[in-house]
Length: 232
Image (spheres, rainbow, N blue to C red):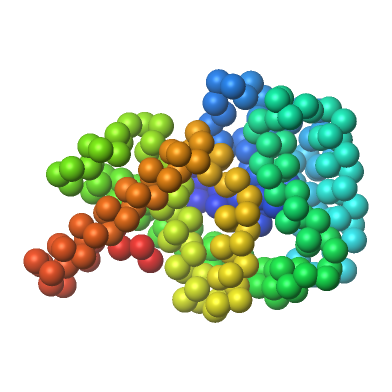
């Protein structure tokens, strides 16, 4: 998984349904997650013209309106998976953004430059710490309750990275940008990228809390020791 995945995920999730879906391991129930019916509406990299300035918004919203119409015309609710599924999960947020009358619209345009800058800088750090924390978790007595097998590992790593990015954006960009980050990540079904369902996502989050409590105990026992399970 490339270090740029989360940047793409964060900034595209609510406008393209995970435009980097080629890096997501599809489940057997989703034979073609890359959306063969409607991908022609994006460029060759399957990315829309992402709005970074206010003058970019009309073109973007028009493109996304066409995409939603295509999804509705070509997919039943039962057939939704992959990109279209995540896209539909974020439809309300897209509508709010394009209405230009919400605080989300203002916060997003005010925050996007800092979010891009910090998330690019933090991508390697958060990814490395996520993998390191997964290894640490496996060695902790009692961690077997989380069934740290390959499938859950993927979910844990993505969930950990998301928490790490959230902490980074709060520290570097401030509360408004952090709020925007959390709103995007929570209001879209981002856990469908590497978690099979919400239950698996919640189990991964519990594992992170378990690891965090273990780290606090270790710090008390061994002052000064830096542990990979500290959410940055």
